[in-house]
Length: 195
Image 1 (cartoon, rainbow, N blue to C red):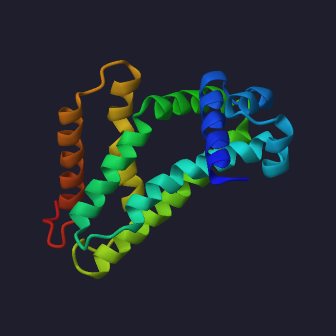
Image 2 (image 1 turned 90 degrees about the horizontal axis):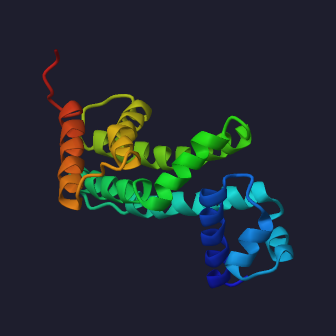
């Protein structure tokens, strides 16, 4: 399969899943991708595998920003945060979130697939934080907790504002993201005052 065909299939899969939920028909995905259904089953085996592969593609895009290191934890975290929010707060990201909330009670394997996919990003974020701690840029601490905390700060009320149609402007979002990173860095500053 060519890279172009693969990209078309995964884009079509995400779009259809977001529009119709996890109960979406594989025929619709094949039609939108411009391939026959047998091609999907030949390369992905099942709808579940296709969904997982599409999620992996989204996470891989985020990992590009996590793996590239500038030498500055502030710059690395800001670049990741901007990419993370761009993807999760996009129309597709919000549609995917809505679909997951609606469908996970009926399809628990869907929730597991999403948790597994996002765990890959959390592990890489924890690695970045561990490296910064080793260099003395951040105080030592539980890197898994720190990664979870940062991801929560980046979604939290921000996602709610987008879902409720009250999304901030791009400059407001950029300023908010910078504030979140600054708050996180202050919390993990090497010589932070204990309260």
